[in-house]
Amino acid sequence: MNISVFGLGYVGAVTAACLAQKGHLIIGVDLHAAKVAAFNQGISPIVEPDLDALLKSGSESGQITATQDAAEAVAQSDASIICVGTPSLPSGKLNLDFVHKVTAQIVEAIKESKKTHILLYRSTMLPGSTRAIVTDMLADLVASGQVRVYYCPEFLREGTAVRDFHEPSLVVIGTHDGTAPVDAAVCEIMGGQPSILAWEGAEMIKYSCNYFHALKVGFANEIGRLCKHLGEDGTRVMDVLCADTRLNISRYYMKPGNPFGGSCLPKDVSALKSFARQENLSLPLLENTAATNAAHQDLFVSLIEGKAKRRIGFLGLAFKANTDDLRGSPMVAAAETLIGRGHELSIYDPHINLSRLIGANEQQIQARMPHLAQLLKQDARDVIQSSEVIVVSQKCVPFETLKELARPDQVVIDVQGWRELSTLSWQYEGICW
Ligand SMILES: NC(=O)c1ccc[n+]([C@@H]2O[C@H](COP(=O)([O-])OP(=O)(O)OC[C@H]3O[C@@H](n4cnc5c(N)ncnc54)[C@H](O)[C@@H]3O)[C@@H](O)[C@H]2O)c1
Image (cartoon, rainbow, N blue to C red; front, side):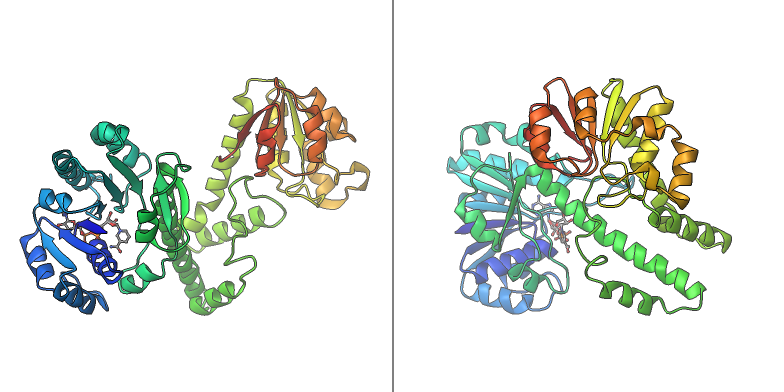
């Protein structure tokens, strides 16, 4: 293909060189005369391992040229890849001025050329940005089919960017609705096994990844500071933590849904927080972990109350499935709040047998929900039939039973991620989806 690459910085220069290596004809576009001149001489405008050699051979073979003239580049291309900067304003807000300006130039050039064109945004943009750009600047070209727009976030890392291009850690293609067929040319440009989402989902993945990386660095550093304070080796502690690839470096605990609960996480988070305070250590990430869980619990209760119904049914009460442990259960806390605010509650949990609750588990129930016996039903049907809102925190009832009993006047709130519930005749809402 003939491809224009807009923005010859870290992303654009690598993209241009690697696509030329794959056999495409590349026209690089940048505002800076010096970058364009360097590109035309096969000299990399940035320091990046392996890039010099690729640009040199691309330039010598005539596969890579560069220009400051957007119209000239678009006129000679089938696709444009937008890699311009998206810096922060002093307020921290995202500045999309470069993306808007480059889009305006490309739109003008496409209208002039009258040819069909693929626009592929790779600059990092907040969710909603691509749709806003399409609505404000590209609506007629998209409606007529002259332009097809993709948002494909870039995940390469400086220092290993060329390798990352050829072996991407993640390939994400955003289309207007996440289901429309993707141009074969876009799949070829992107390589790998793409995940296809709507523009907003693709934009969100980029921010989720970077936020996760930032969180990991912050977490490792806070554990490190705490370790050093205790005379421990923070690197060794984190090395051992990372050795657990079942619970720690894994998908486990990475599923939006229930607030965390149980007998360990709330207690241990609170103990470490109070220890850090006592030792005068500033560990904002660790200290605020309980706060984020509390915010999630508040949202969970508001979601139930927002349905403005009195009769609420819980399927699952323990903090997770296949246990009778009620300590720190988000469902117990939600039940307590809802009862206090005048709701009628009924609960089914196959593992809760009041006569068998002993020790701390029993004390917790006596203190927080002394009337639990009246609320607990032996048969899930009683809960489902009598409730206007059903909150599902565990898969503790056979799907067939739910299918048989679900009614259109009922609302089901799914905190478990049991997506099949959305196919039944009740109104379905997920806590994070
Ligand atoms: N640097 C990375 O490692 C990395 C990784 C993934 C994603 N990203 C994202 O990719 C985007 C680009 O990042 P970068 O580090 O390559 O930026 P950069 O600042 O190095 O390069 C951006 C280039 O765009 C050019 N430019 C601005 N307006 C232009 C226009 N109208 N026409 C042509 N060129 C124009 C600038 O002159 C500059 O050379 C950003 O959104 C960034 O967040 C960067």
